[in-house]
Image 1 (cartoon, rainbow, N blue to C red):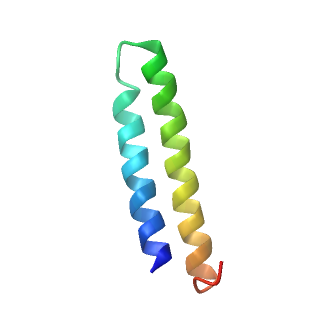
Image 2: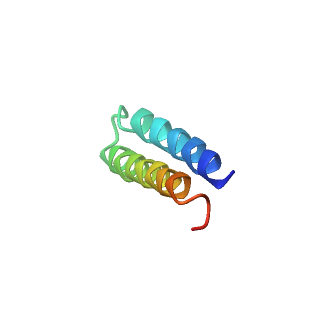
Image 3: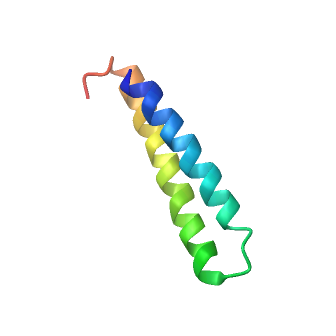
Length: 56
């Protein structure tokens, strides 16, 4: 179950980060890039959990 949860959280963070990157404010764009990377990390964590049978 952790695999699915991590992937969903990752997708949500990545989408929010991409939306923030379209802002006119440079600080918000930087925050969006960081949030997108967090999302990709969560997705990768979900992939690992899936391959290891949620034993992580």
